[in-house]
Length: 245
Image (cartoon, rainbow, N blue to C red; front, side, top):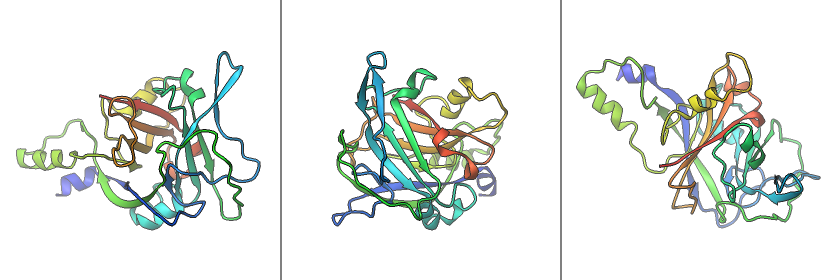
């Protein structure tokens, strides 16, 4: 329907895929071993008044050349190359409160990995998920969960609600699917940047029995970036929000 089409934002969903023969170092994945250039330090949280380190778990990495190649609708919406990695302290399981929780997750953004070498490290902490999964990306138009001032006729509103029904839902870009309130509004309330750029969803990772991941009580992790254009943002500056039931 035209009214729904005008409301939609492009996004990509992704599904876990077991790859018995293993994945290339720079391939998108959940769990397993991250791509590690030489002399890379494994991310750690500082605990006990900053005198002791606890290695974070590797959650996953996302190759944006691979994503845009799979989902052409994201061309110009997200970067067309580069690799993003997420590490997270699953013992602390932070909610994203600023500035306290910045110590408990780490984003590493490699804008260009074309000529980078790979030197695998022995992981000091098991990944989460512990098994490695490849990722299959597909296009999905996304919609706001609570659009303001929509005067849909009843039959169209029912169709709109059907677009929000999902099971495990992992997503890149588009509107977030909140467990509670809009996670981008949460980031805006604690804004530390002091400008008018909007917060935009970069990535959401849902709890998923298929991969054996559970964020608190059936929760979802959201990464948001404050930038006018997600495609040109420094993705290492994204902040994290955890919501659960």
